[in-house]
Amino acid sequence: MDAKLAIDCAVLLLYFVLIISIGLYMGRKQEDLKDFALGGRSIPWWAVLASIIAAETSAGTFFGTPGEGFALRNYTYLQLALGTILARILVSYIFIKPYYDYKVYSIYEYLTARFGVPTKNAASAVFMVTRLLASGARLYVAAIALALAYEMISGTRPNQTETLWIYIGSTIAIVILTAIYTTLGGIKAVIWTDFIQASIMIGSALVALGLLYSAIPGGWNEIVQRHGGFGVSDFFTTGLDPAKHGWEKIKGMFEIEYTIFAGLIGSTFITMSTHGTDQDMVQRMLTAPDIRRSRRSLIMSGLADIPIVLTFLSIGLLLWVYYQTHPDPTLPKTPNETFCHFILYQMPVGLRGLLIAGIFATAMGSLSTAINALATSFTRDWYEPYLIPGSTAEQSLRAVRWATVGFSILMIVVASTTSYLVIVHPNVRIIPIVLGIFGYTYGSLLGVFLCGIFTKRRGNNLGNIIAMIIGFIVVAILSGLPNNIAGLFGGKLYTQPTWLPVIEFPWWICFGTIVTFSLAILFKTGREHRPRAA
Image (tube, rainbow, N blue to C red; front, side, top):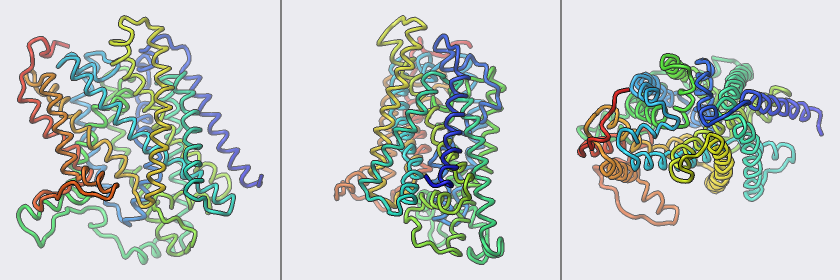
């Protein structure tokens, strides 16, 4: 083995040994499901904060956000981060207290108390299917590094079949390594490894940013000359066409991905759903000792989003400038692969291993939390009520561990399928895929939760399920999903009316929530399910 490659491999091996060791050590002495799912509510708020950052900063972010900066050459994606701050403040004061008051393990248990078992089952099922698809879809991203590394070592670009097998093999390796400490260590192992992984991810991104800037001859002057200067439009856009009037002018706002309105409104709904109604995110917040510290970790994670997103977008923009000044005929055609290409071919030895470790850190951080949340939700919402009613603490702990293994296998299947689709369609961008999967269903989840929290006598099982289904259908039509699916087979189901916009992904959850909430409140809550005192 080449000496330089050996050094990078040693750095990567050290990372894996460190993460698995810490995960197993921190997760020892578990006695029941509460220890596995909530860590005994004894996790420091700053560790919860790091875990939230690690969970939402996936490998899709590590490559996808620089890909957005590289492709768009601006910071308009940053507008979506504005809504995440507002949303986290709302979530911290609307959702967290009821979850603590009801002492839930799975947040969908709250819906049982408020509406009944059918609503809980519907919400839990929506979460499990959506989270499985979304986490599996972004899991494949970490395999990009290995596919490009194969090309670098062999000197030949792998064909589609070879690339697919590289993706599948690396996906299996990542899932197995992550599943080891997640299965045995539970949420404690997840959070403490997330803390390490978040530190590696942020540190490696800052190193890459510094190296990129220093590698551009002329520095800032060259950047401005190549880009043409920076103005307000590079950060904020409205999407309103000044040449149009009335509805036509407003309609265009919904057809552009990144606008200030999408950031302040659409992104607020996105984050309220992912951080208020998603077991994956909320579960780590419930490990804090009390409501006050849980709120602190959540709100501060929103403030941390701005510099993190700004860093990754800057990496993408600097990559574009760098390859303008250093033309590279082997540069990948897909923007998602550009950052990884730079890491493998331009990073110094050792630092290259650190950056690759950062890639795996983001993948494993988001994967471990997703698997843990899925297993917890399955055990609490389905295993204990239906499969083994009255199960003992030992049975539940064993079930949640086997569920962790089962969902790990399913993650591999989804990631492999996603890899195939992306290889066949190389121009696909990651961020719209990952956020888009949530968009179809999480508006329905958020609408039902808001009905339960903001009203006392509105909403019931039948009405909630009808509202959730119609909310999904409306979003599917507004986003053009039926035609997109038909297009894969060379067909078209219908023609969208000219007055009806084909809305972009930042707005999907917003419309889904409004439709679901508006329909759910038309139904009256039965007396037995009106809110009880905390």
